[in-house]
Amino acid sequence: MNLFWLRTWVGLTGLAGLGAAIGAWWNPSSPIDTIYRNISPEMAAPLSRLYATWLLLSTIIRCTFVVSEFHVSLAVVTMATYVVAWVHFSSEIFIYHTVPLKPGGQAPLWVASFSMGWLLWCLIQYRRKKK
Image 1 (cartoon, rainbow, N blue to C red):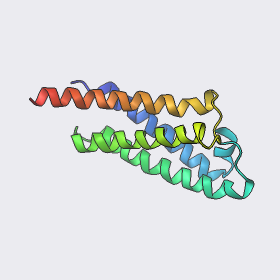
Image 2: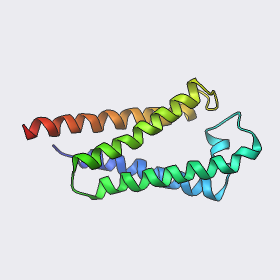
Image 3: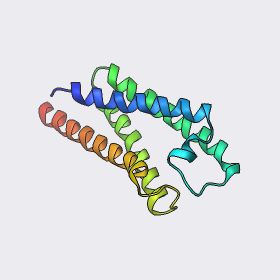
Image 4: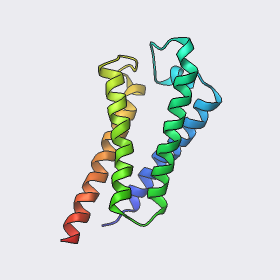
């Protein structure tokens, strides 16, 4: 099982998350301007800090997966970061209507879906190889 491309993809999403986290800490209105809509101005700063903290945590987990030897538990935790992102953005789009269903709002769903599928496929292949 060649993990080079998977690690490259996870690393790129991790670095993109790091850039978004720095942007959200630097400019608290950044997530409001780029992703979220219908958020009150007084909620912008706390939401931005929470968003940046989550992005930093998921970046650390994803980059740890990239630089470490393959372990099933680390792959599952890495996949969990994408599951959380997918559930979050799905609920923001379809339940709370704070993220528009436009390319900017769709991108996190596509990235999370693709990443979850790829990681799940690799975990299944790893399990088959172990038998």
